[in-house]
Image (cartoon, rainbow, N blue to C red; front, side, top):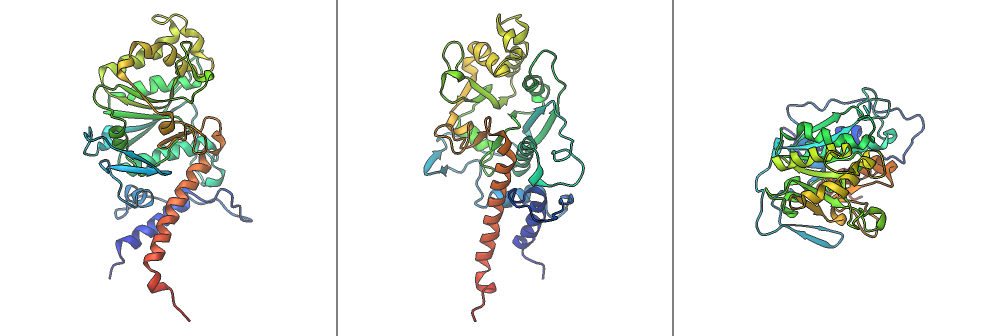
Length: 340
């Protein structure tokens, strides 16, 4: 008799998890790094594995509500998206760094998650989220832009692939999808991202240091929902050209100053396109889990604790996996527990 599907899945999950996560605080004597295991299988796709790990309840894009830390998040009555968008969505990283050295995500050698450098953990989170929900994933390796800070490359990088998708979700390497089981379609419904919205970004925390010269809070460019329409392309081109001062006098100072492209967008570009921009609550799409405000319920952006990105992702994945293992133990309790 063939083993039950749940047991096959559990075996596959455990094999994959041995490559993905280990306790970062555990350092056994003479421990050797894990060898890479192939995830190609006719019987067990990586999509099914990630769904098994992260989504035990079958949460879907039309699940009416989500509860986190005692707070209820509910979908509106009218939903924009009722079917999966699949490969019409791209989860995007853009970076000047190749990440090919030892302990980085694209290093073709032995893999030891405990030693993984932080930004590589962010890339793995984004890739895993895309695989969990059937989206496309791209890592755009961009050359530095002379005279500009490295973070500016996200703008032309986003522009370079936007035409190929309905939505591109850009995420900084120090930002994480915090609820891996919740698909982006659910968030689009929750945030009411309809056809009139070109860009959606989370507000920064309150504080004068996060305000533009008009006293208005910046929208953080570490998480961007970009919808493919002519206005979105126009906005991104305007931002990309902002430091050249052909349209926005004074913008050149943001080529390589604090907040860089975020300050250029917040101080200049957004004022011309406010009706097409959705500003998301900081509490939901920015910040970190233990801050008083901006806890990053759905998207966490670890701008002041970047060194913990890999550890945070690893611990959350391990917790999800062990919850599934524990559930399997409980299901088998009557069979495996023998009283003496």
